[in-house]
Length: 202
Image 1 (cartoon, rainbow, N blue to C red):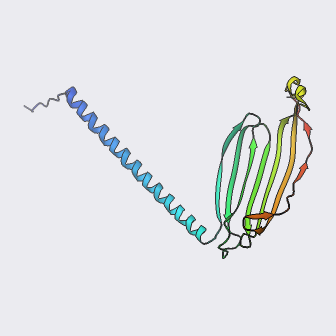
Image 2: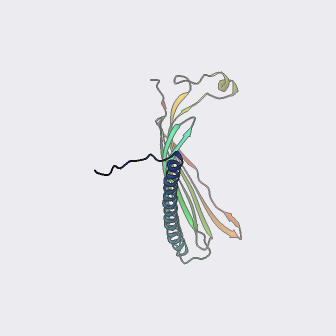
């Protein structure tokens, strides 16, 4: 006669023990992988930082890019991209700090576009400073008129207050040092209004 094999079901205690072991192994594997990924990311970040620090020490230009969404009640959803570029106008000049140019451009779900660029620069052993702002806007807006009563009594609608605002603005400043921490210079503001169109209701 052939021997008969009988299988017995594991007891509830044994099944719970096996389940705990499996969960423990999975948890340890997850923690190990997470720590490894975190260490790799820290290593990459440290390498990027060291390269950036070396460039700054050498007076070289450094570029950073940033983008993302935003929201305002007037413009609704905004998708924008921008950046910051820092540099030295003279690498050998130890008396000047780093200059910067930062800018951004965005489009909105309300049909508008906005852009800006801002320069902060230092020249000739910090004897000359040149700052400048450039703004561009092509956005839907509202105008209620002049005075408190118009603002209070004019209803907001496409036919009463809504219009499309388009303009450029350039705002340079040139500063010259005459004494320590004392600068003088001309300021120029140029605003270029564009075509203003009444917004039509859909």
